[in-house]
Every structure is written in structure tokens, then in C-alpha cells.
Image (cartoon, rainbow, N blue to C red):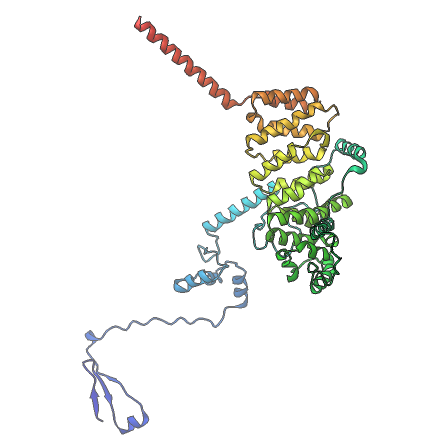
Length: 497
């Protein structure tokens, strides 16, 4: 059979009609001597099972390290790197041995996490999401978080309690004022005032314009949509808000459109969602109007009816602090200056105490409260002042001077002051005693001679008499240096003589 030589390797490839017809090729190798034959290195093929036993898969998925599941966790080569990048559940820790012993790195991590959880449990804290995520929070807040103490009825539990003496003082002031006390403005009052301004600008000599022909009237479609949204907001509990409601802050006349939804009848959850939307999308002035005309009346009504504040309204107050200037001008200062109860001041003040606020906003609010004259003073003013002072801001000199003047003005008032006033004075002296000059200390001592509390007065006096240890040490060092200089000068004079 004819064949063809294929080089020095000793291969013959026969070719003929039969082989070409059947397309079969026969490769023959010429035998060589044993010393020239290369050694064939063949690996034994590892026969693997088509699948693992069921109990091995179950234990492997559960993360249980056993000798049988060791191969599940031991990955080598390129596949191990890829799985480490793609598998989010992979911690990067592998067992040291196939017997399931926890490695040292993993045991240290577990111990550290246990210590952190124990520390959080002792301090009464728990982890939570950031307030700046998305639209100022999560979409659904139907379940109370662990950050606040909530009772079975869904009300936030506040540590402070209103003092009976402060409540009696507030009742006496309200009876003295009688009907002269002005009611808090509402959204309807604000809109009516704006309409009156438009009518006055238009002039009184023209004929009245019908509602259909009035260019300032809202379109009928807008009135229909937002009027129908009112019942939905009354029953809202969780989920997404309508898109028509989310675009409300972008409208030029959003106050008039918002009135169509009847904000006074919204559910607590709807009020929380609305506060997030309006606080994040409105300007500082617009957010101030919303907080003052919508959120503040809802908060005060809930406290008056239940003697507590609903969890969702409490969270709405915290979200309102996204714009500190709007919060202080729309909720904090109106609440203090319009005459609120101590319970309202304690609840709203607890929000300020828990949330971080810029120093300048806190100092400006404290100065505004310090300007309240004794004739218009209420116990809630001192409660809110004490909360701001207790945040331990590095206050400007003007703010400290304003607080000293505020307390000194009460020397002209002969009435017996409630406990909240003395507590605010004590907190101020404790926090800023080293920032007071000798003249300011003497003014506060004069206040103590007029208004002295049997339990709090001695503490205030002790704080006023305290001296700064660092300042005393500095003065002593200065005296020693002067003494050494004088002694050295005397020695020089003796040597010259």
C-alpha cells in the first residue's frame, strides 16, 4: 500500500482508493529505541459526582463548615477570584481546616461586632439610615423605628414632664390676658389675606369680575384633581404619594392648591410625607410658611387632644429640621412667642436636642428668645432656652450678653418665678460660667438676691463663685515670672554696686 513520509517523527500516512473513499486516515508511528522514547505524563482523571448529596448542599448553603462541605468553601484559582467579586455574600474568609474551625480573622470580627452591639444596647442606641437618603428619608414609615421610644398607641415617649407650678403660672397668665390673646394663623387666613391684598391693588372702582372670567382663579381641572385628592390623604397609611401631590411645591400658587386637599384632615402618615416633600423642594421662606401654617397646627392639636405626640408627627418635626432657618422661624419661635404649654415646649424641644443644628441658627434663636420682656414671658420660653443652652454651643459674645441681660431684667419683676426659669439660669451658668466677665457675674448675683430658689439657688451661687482652673494656673505662672524677673533685676543692681 503506497504511503507518504511525514518528516523525521516517523509517521506514515497511507493513501489509496479505499482509504480516500472511506475518508479514514491511518497514522502509524515508527518504533524507536527505548532510550529515545519520551515518557508520557498523564494525570489520572478525577471522576466527580454529578451532584452532591442533598444534606451536603443544604449544609453548604446554610454556611455550616463540615468535612463533607469543605470543598464548597475552598475555592482556588481563577474561579475563586471571580466568585469573590461576584458573590456579595462571600465575606472573604475561609475555614482554616476542613473540620469547620472558625479562622482567627473571622473570630476577631465576630467578637468586635458583639462588643459593638453590647455597647449600643447599654447606651440605648440602635443603628439607622441616614436622613439625607433620597427624598429626606424612606418612602414608607408605617413601622416605628427603634430610635424613638414609642408606646402601644403609637405616641413618642418623652423623658421630661411638665411641672405643676409652671402649668399654674401659665393658667394665671392666660386668664389675665383673656380674649386679648390672638389665635394662631391658619393656611386659610393666609390665603384670605393674600386675596385681600390683590383686591386692594386692583382698586375699588372697578366692577366685580366673575370667577369664570377671573384670570387669577384656579383652572377647573386643577380644582377637580386636588379636591379629589383630599379623601385619599385622609386615609393614607403607606406607599407612594400621587405625582400630582409631589409637583405641588413647584407651583407658583401652591398655598391655594394645597388648601383644596384640606390639610387639617390629613392622616399622620400623610403629614409626614408632605413634610418631606415640601421641606426638600421649597425655598426656606416657602418651607417656613408650610411648617407654620400646616405642620405646627397639626402638632399642637395632637398634643392638646392626646397629651402626647404621634410618632409620625414627631418624625415630621425631625424632617423639618432639614432647613433649620425655616424650622426656627416656622415652628420653634412661633410656638414660644405665641404662648404654648410646657408639654408642647418639652416635646418640640426634644427634637432640637436630638438633631444636630448649625451653631449660628441655634445662637440666633437663643438671642430671639432672650429678647422676650418679663411682661410677655412664659415658662415655655425658659424651657426652650434651656434646651438650646444645653447643646453646649460655642456661642458668640453677643448671645452670652443677651442671655445675661434677659435674666437681669427679671429683677424688676416681683412675681414668684416658676422652676423652669431657675433651671434655665442654672444651665446657663453651668455651661458658660468661664465666658462671663466680672461685671456679668455681679449682675447675675444681683438676680439671685431678688429671685432665690431654695434648692436651685445654692447651685447657681456655687457655679458663679467657681474659678477657671486653667486661668488661675496661668495667673500664678505670670506672678512667678514677675517675681523671678524682679529678683534677677535686684541681683543685677547688687552686682553693679
